[in-house]
Amino acid sequence: MLIVGNGRVVTRDAQMPFLEHGAVAIEGDAIQSVGEEAELVAAHPGAEYVDAHGGIIMPGLVNCHTHIYSGLARGLAIKGCNPHNFLENLEQQWWKIDRNLTLDGTRACAYATILESLRNGVTTIFDHHASFCEIPGSLFAIRDVAAECGIRACLCYETSDRDGKEKLAQAIAENAEFARWAAAAREAGDHMIAAMFGGHATFTLSDETMDLMAEANDGLTGFHIHVCEGMNDVWDSRERRGGIPPVERLLQHGLLGPDTMLGHCIHVTPAEMDIIRETGTHVVNNPESNMGNAVGCAPVLEFFRRGIDVCMGTDAYTHDMLESLKTFLCIQRHNAAMPNVGWGEAMQMLFQDNARMASRYFGREVGVLAPGAAADVVVMDYPTFTPLSADNIDGHILFGMEGRSCRTTIVNGQVLYLDREFTTVDEQRIDAWTLEQAKVLWGTLNGRRY
Image (tube, rainbow, N blue to C red; front, side, top):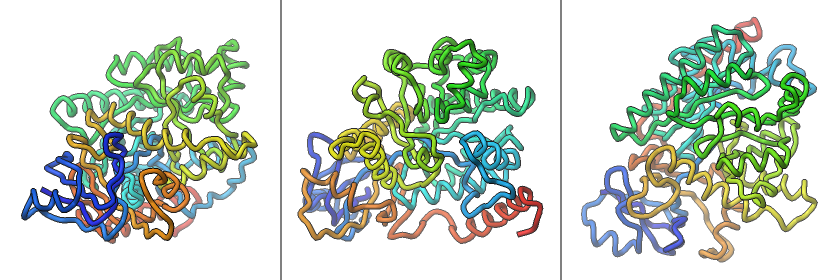
């Protein structure tokens, strides 16, 4: 038995949303009970105790869209990279990186991303991977790192026509093999690793490729695809696909549905929004990345008005979900020219829709502190100088907390990060090895030694 106490508890459970002097009792990989600390401690004498030091005890955060393959890009300047639009950004930077990413490079990216996520209170990630240098075994390499570090992870590979038929076949095979493995693992009771079937974007996916994806997946899982992030999808549909919009193409090839998640969806039409809603497909918004790539502001407020489920991700621009939360509110208000919109949508995306998506894929209730839910708990340092209660906790999270406020991270009942120290892995050893892999990648990209 493990008790996390000496803090204020934010449960995300409507039955008991907030406890001023609360605690969480964990038995194995599940939450056993949530209540007043004095009562829980008395009921479980001898239990291991994690001290929250007066902070906020809350469910671990979920990132519904990230890219592990960009993990070694921090500080990287690729020679000749000077993009003037979104496609040039892909061609000059991200596709160059993934075309030179070996399996060891993929492992290093996974370590960098996962440790940074845990450090920011993120306990579940949905990753969309690409390493066209070495595709076979790449998802399994990430799986092994995720298992070693202890994070909950849903993985897929970025199928694309852009590097030829051999690489396309490898990408489809990697997705299918990993999806079969994940299905068997879940059947055996593994709730830590899941799979989706990845596709890059409709402008790099032919109709034939979409059919191959659906056939290889064979109903095992949902699809995770970028849609209308830049205008490339829109232009491609008009110039090469007979004017059929991207979302309609996905519908025609059987790639939509309640298990599918479409990234970005910035330039979708009202008719495409209706297709997304009617098929129960999910959208995942990545506000900070969209701003950084200068691709526009997704019509998330309209998605909500139409009844579309919208999740929140980072696109690996950051690993701090609270940073994305703040950015989302700012860009939506700026875009709408209204300072009174976006609040409810922001909180629903991060704390409800993300949690539902994770619960769907991992077969456990995720994102809530309630009996029987997955024991994914974080402690945020948050000294207060204004009143804090159940009525205004979201305001404190939005305007006061950051990912770096996290001092302790527990996933699946395992204390992975305690008082800002990793407890199950050797961070210094991992960082040293990751640095060597970064030097190899950077040297390959720029033709020099680092």
